[in-house]
Image (cartoon, rainbow, N blue to C red; front, top):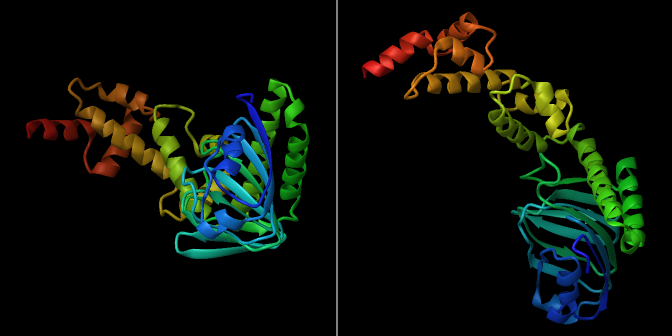
Length: 306
């Protein structure tokens, strides 16, 4: 097997260790913990393909399939039901997904599932870091008939048919296209009416801002671009925190500047103002006094006196 790809077809009456060896060898992604009645008598057919860190699996069962645990590595997975019903356990909630619908979310928090007899599905899985931010607490459900989902399905069907014949560059292109199409599905709901994504988006934006406080180009637009969302969506996510994104950046820069004032070898106020991208020393002094109630110089003197 090439390190960049893998394919597997499975048609079996037992989901035992022998039947699943091929999955680990060719696809290499963690599998759910199937219940004993499933491993002993399941009749399933599946077709799986892997392109780098992207996996696509078609699954059909004529018997009930249950799992009492699922891998929690944080992978992004879209589970689409073509026929039948697939019921997921997410933390303490039960989320049934009937034919013509999908569930999209992190594997984290998914504690099990139950697949009805006669169910056919497709799952598209991405590595944890392929797209950020993601819904960390609640999965997203939607219609399989939206244009973004239909385009993703068409592409992944073609990936199934061509993966064995692609060059390494072709595998990379197929992988990247899958990620972008999955991003399109996600953004349809991020930019729509899915409030569960706001906390995850705000957290990701804060983490990114903290890493770029000394970057002169740090703005809400920069954060939105890096996180692949609109500026409007970013502002809407921060509205749920009670602190606008620009105010967060300003506060974190002031906190960093305050720490710099008390360093063993502190920089002059003018240098600190420049490092944390205040327009000039006067602007920095005014902002500092407004936030902390005293000037930077007075703050440093009072602290050293103690």
